Amino acid sequence: MRGICTIAWRDFRALTFNSLFFILAGICAFIWTVWYGTFLKDFIKKSQQMMMMQQHDMNLHQVFSMHISTVNLILLFIIPAITMKLFSEEKRANTMDLLLTSPINATQIVLGKFIAGTAAAWVLVGVSFMYPLVTSFYGEVSWGPLFSTYVGLMLLVASYVAIGMFASSLTSSVFLAVIIGVLFNLIFWFVGAGAEIAEDPSWVAVFEHLSLGEHFFKNFAKGIVKITSIVFFLSVIGLNCFLTQRVVESNRWR
Amino acid sequence: MIEVRELTKNYGPHKAIDRLSFSVKKGEVVGFLGPNGAGKSTTMKIITGYMAPSSGSVMVAGYDVFENPIEVKEKIGYLPEFPPVYGDMFVRDYLKFVANLKKVPRDQIQSNVDRAIEKTNLKGVADRLIQNLSKGFRQRVGIAQAIVSNPEILILDEPTVGLDPKQVSEIRNLIQELAGHHTIILSTHILSEVQATCQRIIIINNGRIVAEDTLAGLSQRMQGGYHIHVKVKRPSDQVLSMVKNIVGVVGVSKGQELGAIEIDATNMECFEKISAAIVNEGVGLTEFRANNLNLEDIFIKLTSDSSQGARA
Image (tube, rainbow over all chains, first blue to last red; front, side):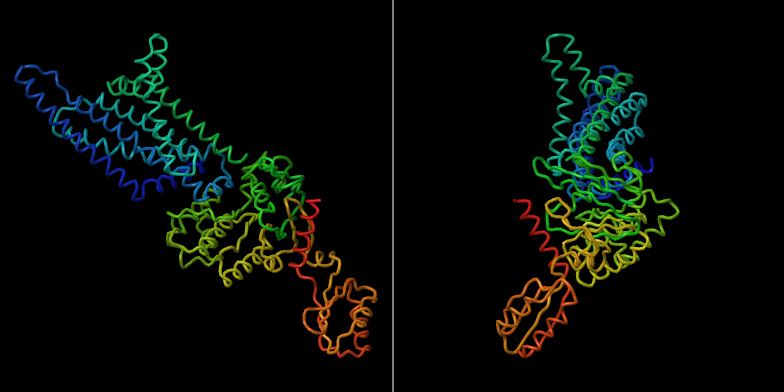
């Protein structure tokens, strides 16, 4: 346990206390701010029209849903750029030698790094939460669906971290790690597209179940927390941590 | 303390080390000597548990490295070829991190870090970022991280590479200082370093041990254990043939300078006879200097011999 904490704390500091992280966070905040502003303006315009037509089915959650999809879109690309350092940097700087000759096993190394990466990514999730939070001062917010959306987002982001960490363990080049990470993330997204192409309903079900997007946008983002979706995210995380552990362990045999 | 048996490591078809066996007793300082690519680093990596061998076993303090890696790694401080330092950390924070990683009890971390900083003379840079340090300082940080957990066994892969002469002698002093309390294996291809610090020397070449002995033992074991340099005023061939016939002399040749004679001898007893023979001949002895064969000679002889043997 101490080994995991030691690695997690060091890596968390290494990931977040540097200029790259602040630049990435700045990019995120900039894009989200621009988009969130347009979403809000649209919402106000529409709700004024609705008011005139005496209809009241507008809900701020529609703004949040759009915000969340942009948050997801940006994090899909940003998180591999954060997790790239987890293993690639260690290999490049030869510090992997230190970890592998310390009295800790590969599982502890991987878990420590996963925790550090997830914590760093959740900082960005926290940044994205500022927008709904500030909006709540000025309007009626239904906290239930927002809460479930953020639970889902945290799980989703943790999956990206696990995937990015695995990508990072495969290479000592940080650029390659980012590219592989983004690619893997996209694969998990576009598996869902298979559901639209497939004709056999059982295959459609398989593709739907394998897609990160299906679980996130069809369940969590709509205020539905399903055990199957939670299990799905946990298994994506588990699988990638396991694969990373195998890669780290295989260093010994080369 | 360390038992290495029949250790073999293949990199594909290439054998990095080939059935290596040796043992190191508690408190011993053993020097690993060999040309580049002889298998020194590979052997050390296997002992530290970083790497698995293709076959063979390593026992450290009674534990098998591959069955109980955690127990073994707790006992070992390792300085790899390239110091494993994080550029974005402060020296002191880095050493604390390593101490935590090596499971040093929490209440001892501060004192261990201070001790390591003091022993490696890092006080002046303890609060600087490692990436801003010169190569020599990074190397010293590497040594500091190896000793910060106060391990029973120290494995140092070329500890003085990249240091200036003053630092080199400091590190040698440090190693001698540590020698009593720790078992140390260090690798190097700088011969004077082993001569200065090691009690026992293991010379490896092409993945095999070609010699394993104390420094004195090694010199003695070599045929022609002494080398005598003689200079005379009036050189003659007769002197050469006379010296050649003395018991204990194995080789006589003319030196490069005028009047110089180089003699290889196996024992000290023949010195007297050689000098007497030259003086009696009346050629005018001006210089008589006897040297122990130094480690460099032994090293070159051993490593070139065995590479010929490997080719044959």
